Image 1 (cartoon, helix red, strand yellow):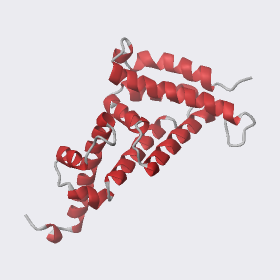
Image 2 (cartoon, one colour; image 1 turned 135 degrees about the vertical axis):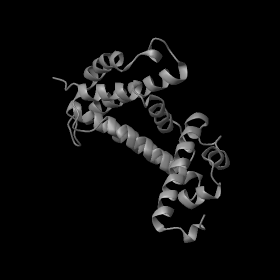
Image 3 (cartoon, one colour; image 1 turned 90 degrees about the vertical axis):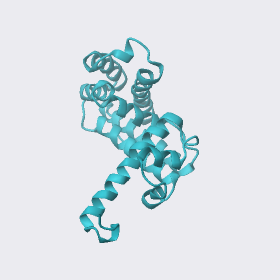
Image 4 (cartoon, helix red, strand yellow; image 1 turned 90 degrees about the horizontal axis):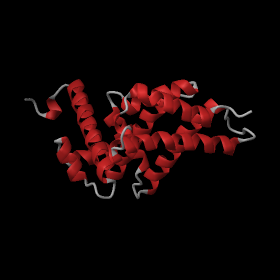
Length: 203
């Protein structure tokens, strides 16, 4: 096999992208399960099957890796609550993410967003992303920046977001039945009821 410096540029880029993704996947699992403080870069590298020095190469530091994971988690949830969705579509999308084929992965994303890192910059990003997701949901209830009832609508949207995030935690951590075994179809209606009650524009 050719040394790295002699390999074609496209091969090196592909290998770098694959290694970076391995580190992100391993870090998300570790951070979601153990939290930021209890996770070491060596554990992440070992789980990814790569040299620990590559974390510094691709992410600069443990904090940088956590931030990259955090941004990915927020982007995943952002796709659930696109601003042009109706309340029914938001409920259906949430049910799909909670009980669909990628449910375990989605639960990891939720835990990532809810765990404090102890790093000021990472937590600032985490808080901003959670607020942004709530704002996206609030638009279904008629919210817009400067709305005369802005704080009330945002509060209702944040409660709706908390309900959805709590569902993910209870399904995976507490294994509360029948919630833990409910399929996508079973979850859609109660989610629609909750989202409708909280996000439907008030008269």
